[in-house]
Image 1 (cartoon, rainbow, N blue to C red):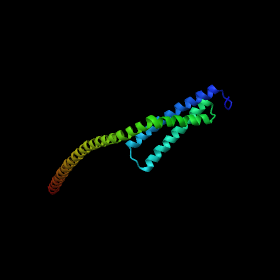
Image 2 (image 1 turned 180 degrees about the horizontal axis):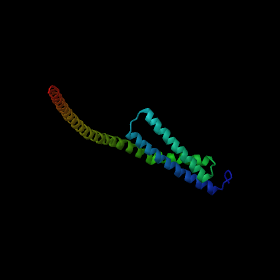
Image 3 (image 1 turned 90 degrees about the vertical axis):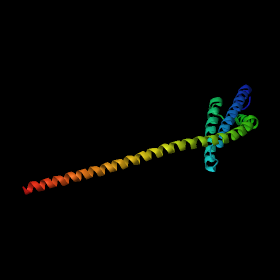
Image 4 (image 1 turned 60 degrees about the horizontal axis):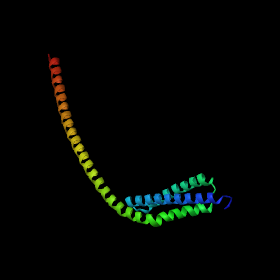
Length: 167
């Protein structure tokens, strides 16, 4: 028995820990892909790394809780690290380079799409603003005409009142 466990239980938990570490490596690769898509400012990379570590910590905690009743043993830690390194060394390195290269290409395509959308929206907004200005000019000219008509009506009404008073 190893630390109160049978060999088969310890071995099966270790193998599962290697698999969980492999999954953490794949999740890390996802963050490599995100880093290649978004800006590489230190603050944003720092926040994405913090997010990765928090999610990984919760994942490891839930793994230990499920498969080892919450008892953290060395072989679980070794299995997690081994699984992560297996993924990171073999397929992770090649896939990371692939994602970095294609992430830059996707980012450039995304910029083109964003710029084309921006240009089309900008043109439509400009047309709407021109139409609004034309409507304002028309309504302003109508208001001027209405005021002139109203003024004429008041002047004629005053003249009529003046005539009525004289009679």
